[in-house]
Length: 480
Image (tube, rainbow, N blue to C red; front, side):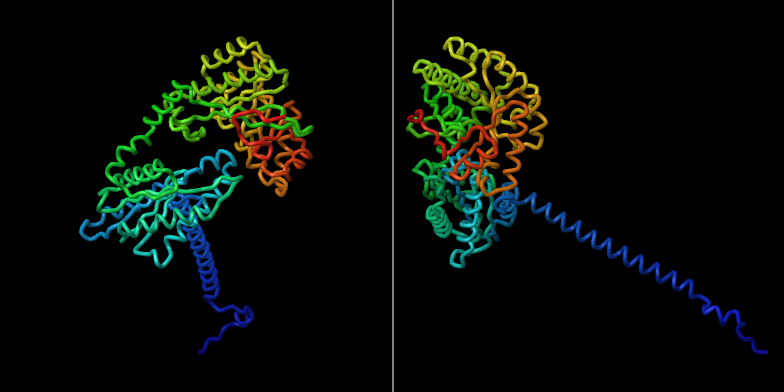
């Protein structure tokens, strides 16, 4: 007898096994969704790893390889079989007066120049008429670039170097009359070098020879250059500094600081310079690192402090109410002898110590806060005033401000340039001023370069202004 489904089964609308099929389908959809999410996450992770890798290999400002990656690129070239690898050349491009731009106008202007130079270098080298083989670019120092060209001989590399030099000169990167030029050193493989280190060292030597010959020129490595390159080492720089100390060739230049309310000069910052035997003037960026490394910076700080005190004594004699500020290196914040020297010089001169202002950078203060607090406290105890330089560049600036008994805050130039058109920086500067007013500290705006900046500073309540608009560093006081 035939069997038929019961009425109960017919009305249920279900077919045996459908539940399992639906469950399996949903499970497959979930797995597919998770796979898609996992794949998306992996792709995002791969993207982030790629970005991290690029950031580790490249210079953030120019997009060129950083020094380490650039050296690795040359290492790979030398790892090739000597009989199979093509000839190559390294061109080192060193900006001649970049430190003046950086020291005078700050990092923003310096970064802009670096980007422009990088554009000149890549555009020149990638022109069809200059292409001989693969070319690699690197930023190998603060103001130094490397160009490594495969399948390039001496004539070809020298031609590229000269084009780069000329185009940098022609670009006329002008900042208040300062012009950027470049010195280029050229080294070839296999004529001059057989290893990466040898190639880099000889490029340094050729580049240094170009500078000794007068800057803004190209020089092909010659074996005599090795002797000249030794003068570029820090040990030789140490000798130059010692000689300058012995021969009294450290000078002070003065930059005025304006009281914004009545447009009068309130005080001058004492800026140290070193004059070389041939009469050139070196800025601190060209010798202070070496001085700090070899423990000579205390001598330099003493010179600046003594001359600030001497100037103040002269102002008293002339009946002028002026203040002078002098910088203290972060390396000297625990130098008891320096403190005693300053104290004795002030007593000997018979001046009011409140007319002498000492400056330390925010970075130095934060790096070793306890030492900074002790040193500031010592000088404050004999009546000197204190200024915190480059304020605002650190993430913890305000946290330390209540603890450090300073009298002036110098607002970092990165907040001041183009202030008249930067609403965010105006808010930040106003916040600094408001907090400074609450704790009884005066504010000084650094790097004031544009006429439009002064009324904005006055509106925001900043007390003083310093920069090329007010007056560039000079060997003498401004005429009244």
